[in-house]
Structures are given as C-alpha cells and as structure tokens.
Image (cartoon, rainbow, N blue to C red; front, side, top):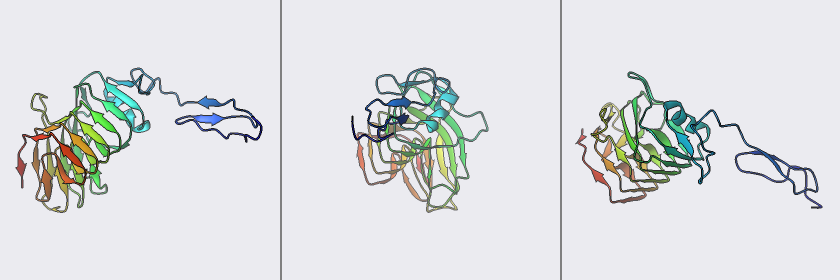
Length: 226
C-alpha cells in the first residue's frame, strides 16, 4: 500500500502500529484477564461481573460491554462508595442487584450516584444504597447523577433487596436535586421503578429531579419528603 505512512491506522481500545507503505496492522490490547470473571468486553462476549472488584473495574474500561451474574454488595458496612465517573458502555444487570453505602460529603462534585454520568446503556439492574448529599448544586440519583444515555427496566431501592435504600439531600443545600433513578436526565429513562424514599427541599422526583429528555412507562412507589 504505497503512500501509507507509518502508524497511520488506529484500532479502538488498542495501541496500533503499522510499517510505512503497508496495510499490516499490529494491535495490542490492554490485558484484562484479571479484572473480570471472563469475557472480552465486546457486545458478543461481555465482561462477566460476579464480585465487588469486577464492578469497580468498570471505571478502567468504561466503554465496554458488561453482564452481571450475581448480586453484589459494593461496600462494607460503614463504607463509602466512590461513584464511577463516566460510563459509556453497555451494562446488562440480568435482574441482579448491587448495593452500596455511603455517598457522603460530595460537595466537590456536581453529580452523585452509582455512576456520576451515564452516556451508555444500562438495563435490567436493581440498585439500592444510601446517599447523603451535602453539596450545593449537586444532582443525585441512585443509578446516575446525570443520564445522557439510556436507562431501562431498572429498579431503585427495591424492597425485596433486604438492605433497601434512600437518598437524602442535606436541607442546608436547597440548590441540590434528587431523583430515584437519575438526578438530571438528558437521555432516555423507560420502564423503571423507584421504591426508595427521597428527602430534599430542592428539586425532587421519584424518577428524575430535572428532566430534559424522555421519561416513559416509569413508576414511583417511594416517598418524596422535604
């Protein structure tokens, strides 16, 4: 292939090289065998998540495809969940549940939740936890602080998950908002159910406290309390 410069080609997720005037590309992908329970992260071979550290490792590969195969407790009692900053992959919860405790004192971040920002696809996931937001101008949601992707067929704080869940906005910070699924929605939230109680004197809603996107076929069974 005359005229092709050295290292001209790119391969998503890999370090790619090619000699000049050649179409032969060498792609080196990062080793992930120890990060998950199996899979390659592609749509036809999802990374398997079966334990706490597997779920945390999503933050290292946020644009991959995942599937849960177990209920997972993400934090110890008295622990503090650090939200995954941005998710832009595809997560199938397979109906399993994750639980976390202790998003606290999040005043330096605008979004709080299992994921701070979702740009990807999250389906069939049950999320429960306890959140106490003390910052001003924070958007808090059990699944995502900000959803700009798609969340569907998910539940928040389902009562059959023994630990339950709730979101509390410290009333000194009335500029903050809380929703059962997402704090702010600029994407799609469909066929989701919230069972958790939400405490806030700011913006509050069982699904999304602030909505600029699409909400369809959702239900709220939690209490909305000032």
